[in-house]
Length: 431
Image (cartoon, rainbow, N blue to C red; front, side):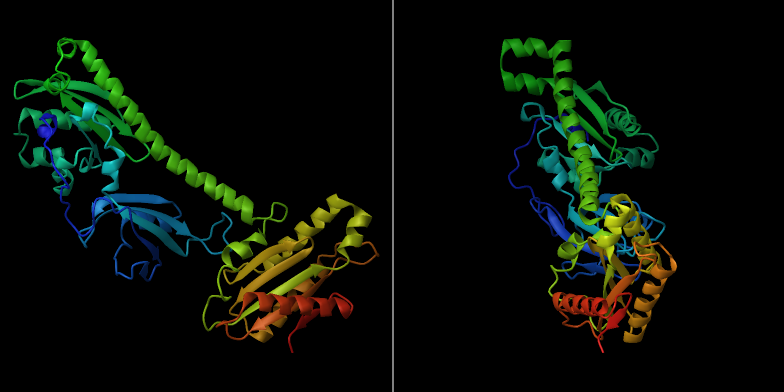
């Protein structure tokens, strides 16, 4: 490792082991269930027992690697839990894990600029102290050999060269979250080393160079004299610190962007009044599929629900009471359909849409009747000395294969119209 401060060798297109190249960023997407792993490239990968997958099944997004997988690929993987449509930040467990694998060598590009005047070297170590990236590809063997100073020292029972011990001391400090600068001599030459943690990842960034390299590059008396003074020590430190901050900013920004995207998605697909999905979820996750439901061979049902005479209710009681009525009906529907096989949506105004899977025609009819009764039994007074009621139109799908969602929705809407035409507070399903 001490060779990091020797003159840089000229290397064209350094070869990398495994079956992926330096410029390959994206590798594959994985969907992991408790029973099976599905890979976008059709391969078979056993990742279910790895820490990031386990953490994601526990509800925590996680990162793992980079590491060499059994296929010889150097990969880094981001994993996140996947919940059913019913999950709203509650106690339900993930139904699977979505993971994206990228080329672990991409980290080399991230720190390629952390080299003072294109000399010296910078590298990243993971929490175990193993090299995972280098700024100069002529030293890629540090990554491919999984160089680890601590393991070398332990194997040699502490009897190793002073240079390796010096590197290890810096690595210990950075993995404890410390930043700093040190010097040591290598082949009778003074070497400068700087280290800083990457807190969000638990990694450490270390960089350094020899003072004579700087002198050789500049070839001026001014720089020669500066190299023998504390000024150059400070200059190198400031230069590398700027790149450390840049690396930290990139990592932190990625996490912040992910949080922002999640919040924007919640705002886009959720109704703020009722807490249900809104109709935009249909365009994002339903209409963009050619057929619906996308569970081949299963039965399904679509319920279109409307609060009877809601405009008169709103005019009589006012919009504040009207909002409370909408929230109450939405809560009744949500509680009655508290199962992963149901998706409850506020379709617009006083209309609600329920998509249900694995229901026979008889079960769909019974569910419609039950929903109607639950709203009526809530006994919310209406404008005409009665109680608030709903009308329900149902389209049942015996086999989901090749059923067009738009057509099924139109059928449910037509049955809702018939329920209103027959006097409201009715349930109509195809005969």
